[in-house]
Length: 142
Image (cartoon, rainbow, N blue to C red; front, side):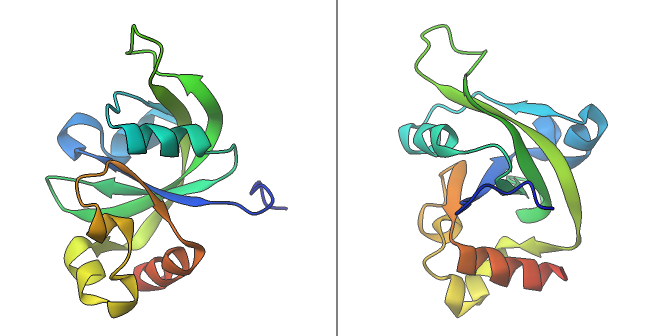
């Protein structure tokens, strides 16, 4: 039985691997996605529900989706924020992608031209449509 909520939304979360990479999340078993200081990214974090899934994207180094994580705790305040206005979630690793999907591959796929990873390239937490999710999973070999 799936942990996905009814009508799940899908996400992409960026992290610089030298600061916090996929292997760090796997070692930690559950990580807090905090430190986001962009209003749209904050709103995306606040919209997440337990059981929804997100691509884990290595930014700056690699520029590729390397895994899938799942929201384990939603709707929490960012523990790094003293003002109380920034959101955070907790995530657990689910699947390392058999084949990482690079930004270059995503940009080369016409059906992903409207993907927020492409159109809002500086956004650290983006929404991914179900169709985009399916295409990217196919590109990854899952």
